Length: 115
Length: 117
Image (tube, each protein chain N blue to C red):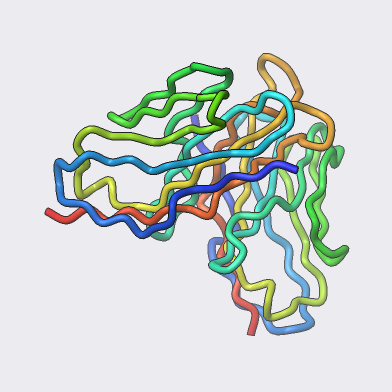
């Protein structure tokens, strides 16, 4: 079956530091890949996505590239802000069949950014 | 365009009771998925509905059920509540533009926080 593995957290950074959150996946076929972010007391917000190999998703300074050869989708940001403090989830979805509407999530990585 | 709305936001029940949660998807979205989020198990898929039909179901007991109405609004029901059902229940909707394969991005509501005492 499908699975997503994220780097262990929590991650604590100073403002303006470089961020990397690793994500690797196991899936049959060619999944779409996503990063979601969850702020305290809220639901999940879509941060970025990639639907095929070598696609780069980007949004709000965050980037991730779909690497099929390494089955990875690492999240990066060049300069984090205090407002980026949240929980980040890597997720995948396959097409059709038994995968209809089923996102498979990693365990989440807590990011805390200090001024 | 309004986002996904869920009601109620908070709910407190006792063991053995049943509960119904409601979800209104983004206008025009016909696919609705439900997830359970707990600190121990993370985010787990419950089921997905499209055009009033359940197309997919996760590994949850039969106490968890759902339905979708003709206007795409969805409800989930949990009967005979157990302490372990305490969780944040998230609903997500998805557009079917480009196909109905179910692999489009999902947009989440704020969730319903269920506490079972």
